[in-house]
Image (cartoon, rainbow, N blue to C red):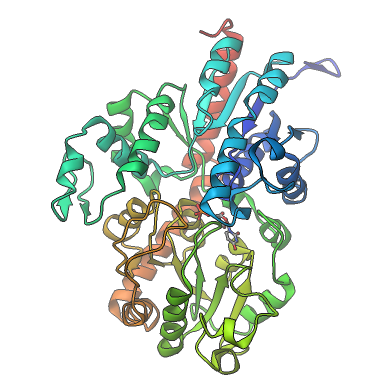
Length: 489
Ligand code: UDP
């Protein structure tokens, strides 16, 4: 490209295909924005309902470099109502299955779009396994994204490539062999989960690299080396993606529309002392039974700590009857606790904004990777309560490896976010974990200090000359080299 007689390097043309769930969509779109901020031509391909949120959420990105291309979601074909285009809007396992099928059916429309005007590289969620073939057909590289830490991907790879290890997990707790960290696993993933994941991982390592929403210091060099040596696959740490959001507005508009006014939330937090508020949120798709929510309510009340508690919209409807409410909240809970002591957010919370407030001193989390790395980026120690997916692995990184959180004691590894759990985590265990982290004392101080150290490392990683910043420069150079060496095979 020539601009006023000066040679300007031709930008890369990059096409991003995020999966239709907030935990995949939010970080990959923030990562896409990172490339756009470096003046590369980015197109995000998604469906109309998701585009509606993204248009608002990415409004601060330069429109010269970032655009959204929409493809129709096949609602009728899969039997979902119009407008349901994200996993976070599916109320039950049946509709989640339909949503997944709908996402897979986007293949043809995306292929037509790309064939008409091929990009220099495709960056796609690993759920879209057909992208490998498309990239090969177009002679362009493909980078995969799965939304996990490399620590977790490495553990999954260890199991995938050593099937005999699965039987070890049947006999109680055990230390994962030949792994760079000392990890004791007490629960094991359901077989149908590994059965679903392993073919995806197998395809993923055949891509031209893995984009990781983490920073090298948190996964650790030993883990990165281990992964790359075992798989021969290159990992690019470009995160934490959430740190791209600097202003109150950018943080508040991340993901979906907030169910609470930002002003209300901030003025409540502003009235609290540093590190005194416990933030409780279990991600965008986790379902806790009413009985379990009741135990949480009893525990936070007994602990006496201030709190912001995010509950699903359908549980905490504003107009619910007393009878409905008393299934998940003890009688009189709101009168005693809501206001000075606590806030309940019914629906979507501006999580990154809340976590970055100095009053927040603890985060009770389901250990979804985004929530985890957002807490690390904000220096907030965690109370870990994994439920399904890869969350039990993330818990190990938080507690055993990095010492930036305490476990609530959940051991039941469920197949899906909807699964009814056989055992409740009791109010006593929850209160104990809350007190361990929030009451002060030597252990809590150490955990808080380490969390602050990792916050500094996270911030350093995304600054000029930090590890993630340098990785992004190196990746852009590498992709330009591949483009200019065409044809890519
Ligand atoms: N999130 C949010 N507000 C909510 C619930 C979730 O902003 O009320 C965001 C959260 O910040 C994170 C994502 O949604 O970026 C959830 O991803 P995570 O990997 O933590 O969990 P998942 O929802 O995939 O289980």
